[in-house]
Amino acid sequence: MKAIRIVPLAEEHLNQTSRLHVRVMPRDLVSKMGICIVRDVFHRGMLIYPKSIGLVALNGNHVVGFGFAQIDFARFSGYQKKRFLDYYPAVGLALFKKPWLFFELLSALKYLKLETAFTNLGPLVVEEGYRSLAFSRQNKISIASMLTSTLFKQIKEREPNFKVLTMIRPNNLPSIAAVSAGARSRGFNLYGKSRIWFGSDERIVFKYSL
Image (cartoon, rainbow, N blue to C red; front, side):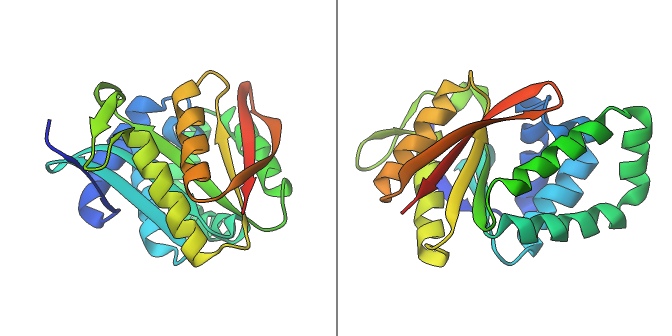
């Protein structure tokens, strides 16, 4: 395996990141709406929204993971709503075929009420075959930890006063460990945990601050 590189998200990565998103997280709300929504609304929106941080993990030219963060998540969500309207035929078709997704969208709005101003960290996705420890120059560190450490570093540099929130499924222990390690490495402390439901899908919300 080649050395893993962490680089900024770019247009040429979007086809790979969106396919990886749907493959690894088929139960995710946007995954259920279809790969075109994942790519054109969410992932491409990360490139356009000025306060977003998008990172990809590359093995050669192959995307093996990615991590996103959205500074001022309420503003980002308002921006994304406009993008959903721009893609209303595809969004409307997805909701027509799967009307229960409308209720999951309503559940997702509760996330915005957790804090008045915060940075959302997520999603954090690593391809299944690359979840073991990968070699770096300093030591051995998982790709997920490489991504989270870099995300927390850039969040700290760009908006240190915002709290950082991330949602993780209760059984996703590797992601929980990676986020915790990434936060500690950049001086962030866990100050709260809560649970939230997206339809029948439970998540734990972890809250960090400097």
